Length: 585
Image (cartoon, rainbow, N blue to C red; front, side, top):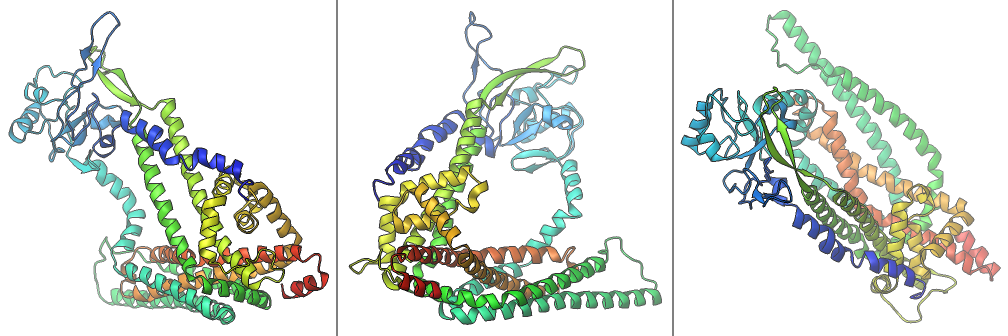
């Protein structure tokens, strides 16, 4: 088993074991050495100075024969000047930027006001304090001080943005997007709904553990009742809104009451369309349930086996949470490195002119991304996907190894992979993962990362075969495909029913929390611009919470099915036992 993964371990040692060393020693070091995280937070001016810190001067040489000279306006102390300000707000994409102490709080229409701002408040709106103090009304130098008029600005992420532009953007998005998010974040009820989703997910896990056969019937019945109840609730909301509108119209017809321009428009067409949509979906799903109820009995035996395995090893249910924390840490690290690499380009000078034919120009510094930084960002992105897949593979190997050991030690008929001595499936699975299978996990994660289309066959089932057979990735992938094809009917039926039950359980948790949200928000229903948007968000969040806890059951079901398929292969020399096992299987 150790020799079969030797080549994979070499690949893994080249990348995964040295991943942190390689990134810290090469990519991250390059980004920190040539870039500056302060430029992301505070930004930089057009002369190589980073806002919010004391800068070193930049030296340039106009030609090889002349000595170096300091680049104009570089090397300034910007400790108290933490905001980027465009000198020409009307052409911000091609404007010279300066670091200022604060954004202009009022419109400025004269150079005297700029000098007053620098003298009285110590806020230079020019590229340097001396430029603001010595500003001449008759002959202002191009590119040093702002172009008049200077609009009133506001601070957004340490960048000065004209308030008129901010108000315009807010006005454009206030009709739809901002009203959506305003409806989402202003009510505390959503936190309670998230807590309810966690409680329901844990409750469903407990039900699946102790009432494996009963929960299948309960899930079918609960989903039907919930679907009909939610559809009826939507129709009830439409009926109440329609009656309320009729009463208001009757009152307005009898009394002359001026209608405010800010009155929220009627949403009866939206409510009616939503009600009709839910009614059609419910009708189709009820027909599907009637056709699949008879097949649910096929998953009873498999469910009992999975429940017995997870009951003996309940700590497996916490594995997805640990894996999610590790992936989140890698994501934060990778995003930080990519952002730093954005500031690690080469500084190049460029001369810009005022464009009026007078010949006035100024030399500025820009940061251009090099081919090296682009390749490093691509490398970092691929590395993040690879390491994420590696963590998922390790999780699958650990869970599949523990479940398969329990199966062959306790439930197996052939006893081929059974241990002669008592062992702990969790400890043995973790030991085998760290000792033998990290190379296969790394190679498999790399192949799954690169080959996305044929993942229907080359998927995480490969790691289940690796966990109990000890083969490397490619032979295990071949064996997994053969098992799936040889038992396509049996595995397909049980996988479909088992997946359907778990999917309905997730939908039951999500639907229950969404229905509770619907009734909790009844008092504020008329104040929301789009009531369906918070419900959709709550349904998605609740579904993901339930999926986090129930994903272990999905992995255990796949593992038991592959173990049963392997059992049939091992019993080929004993036709009588094979026939008995096939009947049970």
